[in-house]
Length: 240
Image (cartoon, rainbow, N blue to C red; front, side, top):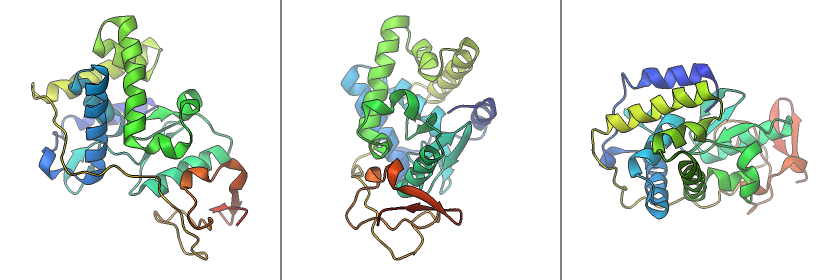
């Protein structure tokens, strides 16, 4: 996440929020948690650090529970937590349509400008497993440079020292809040596949962000810049 206001908000959240019991965590939160744990195990990273990063980046409250959220987008320092992947994707596509490329998406808030070329589409950047694997590889490269996972986490966020230092504090707090308990995956949570936007003859798209008359069966990630236009303030996919 970018922006001092958001970082202060996250810092304050530690006073009110506690880690959600694994068995009670809503499915989207579980997706981020499991992706963080899987990526950590694959790349030899402490589970606590990867889970802490997704918490610092996207923690929210749903159904009385606190945890990470995969359908999160931050554009120009303004973070938004969407109820659905489709709504989050359309928000990100709208930023691209406006010519904005520096925005963060998904469980690990990867920046599209700096990391998007490593994915096949924005849609894939929202997928917890691929984004978690990429985030872990990036973090591991920073650990090779620093020799310290918390310092590496600071550079994961920013190379500007004051931002990196503040972020290190947030990650350290998140790890400390685990009270020595190693995070465990949540069983029975199926990973999401590419969402499909179906032509709806002007009916609102899920998330209430306008209409998207996209050809039936087309993945949302395929709705590129050339297909987006504005109509009465609503985001429309052209060419249909």
